[in-house]
Image (cartoon, rainbow, N blue to C red; front, side):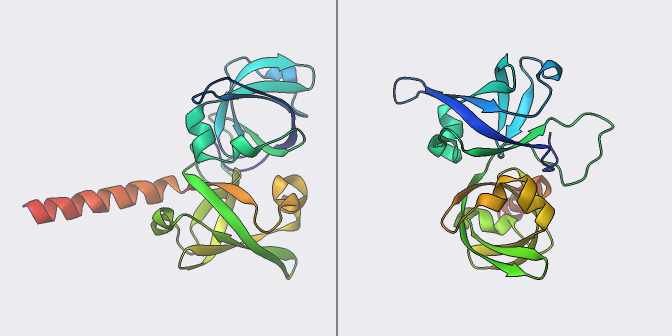
Length: 206
């Protein structure tokens, strides 16, 4: 589990693609994390998706992304130098500063516009229509692994405010209109919708 509080901004250092249509991707990511504190097999959220560490080297770690992960996220479009929001897996006793995240990306959203708003920047995001039922004002979402509060919802779009600290410490500060972002909906919203759907089916079949 993760919280959406980014603890390092890494960069893609190398990429190696597997052959074949079902091939995955191995990424080596430069990081300021202490490599000696990362065990092989550790889970690290990389701009949203939870990936497993398969190799370590000074100043960097390698992870593998399956074809399924590439199909549901932006990872397939990453190149050398792409900024990567990093978060180590939550440990018992850690502060839950954002909201609970699984590291399982639900879909890809798009940054429509950003504009200054007071001391922050307002992002207007367009999400897949099928996911909008899980997004509500004052609810939580994760964009590229960053925990954010939804300000408003209209049709297939929603708005979030990004404070200066987040802009300077995550990849969102380098985002431009048209950019694709990994979107994870709130886990609680997912299960509430599932339960309500099950109750509706029970009422119609009773």
